[in-house]
Amino acid sequence: MGQATPLMLSVGAATILTCIIRKRSLSGLGWHWGQWKYQWLSYLVPFAIALMAYLLVWLLGVADFYDADFLFTQKQKYNLVHWNDASIFLFHFILVATISFFVSLPSILGEEIGWRGVLVPELSKFMSFTGVALVSGLVWSVWHWPLIIKSLYGNDVTPLYYQLIIFSVFIISTGMIMTYLRLKTGSLWTGVIYHMSSNIFIQKVFTPITLQKADSSWYMDEFGVITALVAACAAFYFWRKGRVEFNDLKTL
Image (tube, one colour):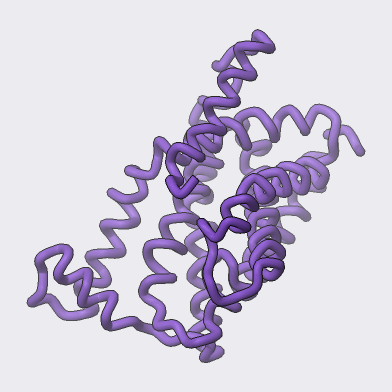
């Protein structure tokens, strides 16, 4: 259970098995690309959420920018010890935002063919946009709970109940945005790109570059209240758009 990729791929395996049992074509999972502007939106929205959240974290003083030890480690890792901190951070950022982004594709795709490939369009057949977004987001969130409960995912600072609540708010908010993009485009790839972008920027850029204090975990990362609230604000915007644009969906 400590390995992320097999767990994420298990969702895809379950989806494929379900399609075979139900004699559903895999071609109907939303493989077409759709308009480029929505793919770019799927990449940039999670970056903007992470950036805004961590700017608030730094400005409010609950954690500091930046962690010099992290950058020193990156200098050694990349064998660029003579570079200054700004240069190594920019190099790391570009590398993570491109190469690491695409490296995460197989595992993220494994999850997304389940959540946004099957679950969202199936729920949309008998639920309103709000219902689809909330139910799919809740299912996605609860799927992570065993990892959090067993301390394989999360932090060792905040209590378990806090982590479950805050993480669920963050994931359901994220799911609201991803549901809008999935239904708007009919493309599975919006979910894949959004998921990869959110993971990459929070887990590999903003969290590690932040110099944490004793209580920083209460506010930052996927289990922090500031990140969750910023995501919820973005979700509210997309919820309002979705209610108007998808009013032809069946009501609950």
